[in-house]
Length: 281
Ligand code: NAP
Image (tube, rainbow, N blue to C red):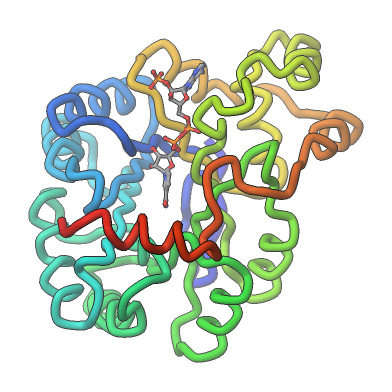
């Protein structure tokens, strides 16, 4: 495993396992498989409604807590100081742990300054080892960094070969915020897994498209958390530390950047209406 040191000294694995769209029923089995494959970093969220499954798998695994890196995220409906504070306790209970390694504001909506105050408090109490944000696009992130005492350690945003987020990453580096990708495969959109350009590069190393994509992102100093419910794919996605893409390979994949979301824009009011309307957790 390769690690990055966050702006407060915490060490974070460059590769983790994400559980978005993993049902509560299936989550314990999936995380158990992921831990068995070798993953030690797990990314969940209050909104995924599967924190208990992560907690069950982690507890039953018997793996020492300090070997694990658990991330969760505070949902919009828990925005504001009081609700966020209560929701941090709920996440700790569901994850069956005395501390969370990384907690993120899931979306830049509702009273996220109040949410962050509760996170800073829990951080100072040692209940959270690092705090950060998600889906904060450069204008939001810069404003946020300017007016908070604790600069976010991480910003988790959509990042994959078709939306590489180079400008966003430039601002993250400027403010000392670690770039983390969500949707490293664009969830397979735009036929990513059959992309001929990435396939040709993967073939040179006897690696799949998925492996070449993860290697590309890691070499760009981006943390990745691919999701799969299939154990053999979890293993495939984990096996990316025994080859290195050349500068030419990196440049070739860079040229696939379409510089726009494969999903939606957070700047579009319709997206904001949709996401904020998803309901309470
Ligand atoms: P993703 O990792 O880009 O793609 C997952 C999809 O790819 C699934 O359909 C999976 O299918 C398939 N897949 C995985 N590995 C494969 C392989 N080796 N070969 C072929 N197909 C493969 O999408 P994501 O789950 O949206 O993103 C990853 C994680 O980021 C999430 O789980 C979550 O933790 C986080 N996330 C965060 C946000 C946010 O707002 N902060 C938003 C989205 C995601 P199977 O499961 O059937 O194998």
